[in-house]
Image (cartoon, rainbow, N blue to C red; front, side, top):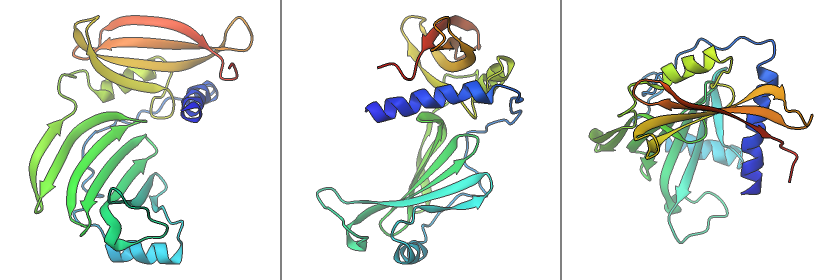
Length: 227
């Protein structure tokens, strides 16, 4: 847990350097399935050939902006030292872009598509999630419901504040009892040093998920080296 926490802090602090002398991206994020990359069948034979060639195989670069991570999940109660097809429960492909979008395709042990899920950043659930049976969609979940002020508008808000959330910072959202509304929570490093000369000045903004109105904007300091 300490390692994960430190990694998150460092992702915040990288914003300090990225905000200096760089323009914020104008790219829009569309949280939906990229039909050019959508998979309906996992190529098990090709995956096994790649693992046989290189046991540490984890995926491939589709292009300069997209990496496809591939792995498998074994059945509960088993331990796998090397790839064993009979132990596989699911195959998974994660399509990861430089704009921090992850499309996760989960397949059964025969390589048949079971679900497609979408994330932004570390774990923000976005877009329409689809669940399949026999090649047909049997269930959908709209993760953007209740957020008329959508992710693209949040990214535009970040641009206006000179932070590119496709590169740095953290975005989350939830139903807030305090504000009696669905809200976005944004955290980013302003790149400015605090008065102690060691900490950085961060900002946290709470936005109304329907209108985008600022419900709260606060500042706080953080020192990644402090224990």
